[in-house]
Length: 488
Image (cartoon, rainbow, N blue to C red):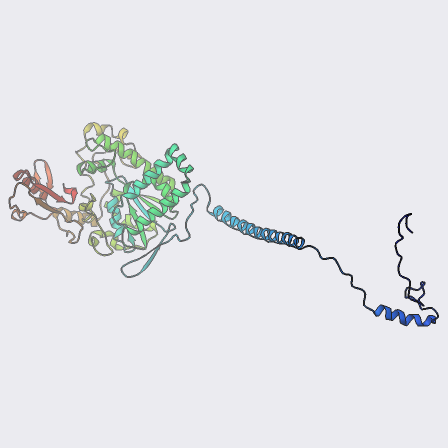
């Protein structure tokens, strides 16, 4: 049908002649019904018509391709980000576990390789680390620290060596940083935390001790004031042990003053001042030794070491868990020898340590301390009584020496012992004249052995010092050099 005025749309084409409209297969008129089935099969076998689709513009396909690529890239990026996040999370968990194992108020962050490897002259390898049983020897100067380390140095498995001098100074700096709140705040803000400083101190101290001498199975350090930081050192080196040398303060102070041993803060012109400073120093060291505990810190009394060296050294090596060796009782025989005792010409005790263990210096202080100081001794140095000394005993009773020590003392008094030929900086007097060009020589004086002493109205003194004083009077413009400086 069409609206008025419009041409009707053409209908579907008529069926072919002879095909019935009632059948979907267009049955043919006049043909028997049974013939319609083969025709239907032939009709279905014919190919269906292919309708031609209208082609789409090219820019539509490109847009779809770009969208698809973006989605694919986003998916790949998301997958990569997920994998990276999982890996980082795993690493963070591992780091947290490591830090938790070594954390705590004094936890240290250490590199993977913590060992120092050294070879001796025989190509024997030694490995040192913070876990090794380091030995620290200390005390107030002139308390027998040099003798103690020399006797241990004579042990074939122990090496102490000379004073490093740097370790106590670095420890004092570390202590000063901790005490200064302002400085500590600045260091913390800069990332230099206590953990960083402790790790650096640990590595530095181990490096100095291990490499300033020949390698050995056991290493020890002898710097007298190091034991003012023994509690801190015990945390840095958990298996270390400490030997605190204790001596009658009156004898220590007298030795400082007469031998002119310069110590920061000590007024060598005043016995009272030096005894006060001695009391303060030994109190700090002794309290820290008690805090560490007897299992790790052993007070060693100088008087008992000198009077009974064998018993004292047996107790010491047992405390250090070291095998016994008779060599520790004859350290003077190993001075300057390979693997023996190395002495420095600048250490004040060198001229005494070259002698065998003797009682020559035990009571040398008697008669030299002013009377007013002796009367106030208990108040000036209360640590004397705390350590077991009688502050009013004059002379004190330290005990009776062993036969070996008695024999050694007789030999020392007679000069019957050998001065090591290979001692660093042997005692000698050198004369250098500038304006006084006199051909002076010590040879015509025919001096006695270096350790002989000359009587005078002012007491005994070294013969070489006597010769030096004579040369100064003969040639005032000359220069006298006496080695080591302990004889100056």
